[in-house]
Length: 190
Image (cartoon, rainbow, N blue to C red):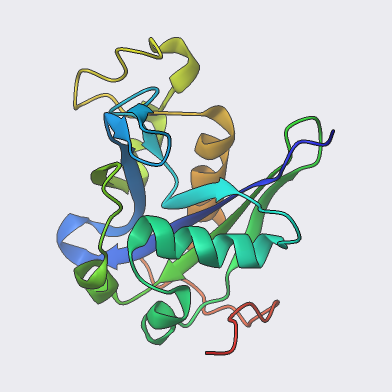
C-alpha cells in the first residue's frame, strides 16, 4: 500500500511593523477534533496549512481543501490579496511523500479573514531573523510538546520549506520581493 502524499503551504506576507516579510506559521493545539484525541507535539509550529491527499486528489486540490479546512476560507477567496505565483518548494517522493508550496501574499489584510480551525493553537509570525532559532521538533517530547512559547520547533522538512520560501519569495527580506509570473494555474473555477 502506498503512503498518501502530505501537501503543505508556507505563506509569507509583508508586515512593516514586524520588520518586513514574515512567515505565517500555524501553532499546533492541544486537542485534535478530527481524531477526537490529544494532539501530538502541542505548541509546535508547522507550515500555514498542510494535510494528506485524499483518493484521486492532485496536490493542488489537496492544498485548496486543506487551506479551507485549516484557515476557514476558500483559497480562491485570498486571490485578490496576492500577485506572486505559488511555487513548489519541496517534493519528496520516498516512503513518506511530501510536497510543500510557498506563496507571497504582499497584502497582510488576508490575516483579518482567517478563521482558524478549532484544533489549532493560533498563528506564529516568524521573521527571517528567527530562522536560526528553529529547532527540530523530533527533539521535543511528543506528548508534552513545546512548553516554552519562546521555542519555535518544527519538523525538518518544514524548516527547510520555510527557509526556501524566504530565499525564493523574499530574497531581500527588507526590500521588495520580485513579482513572479504564474507557473501553474491552480485556482479552481468558482
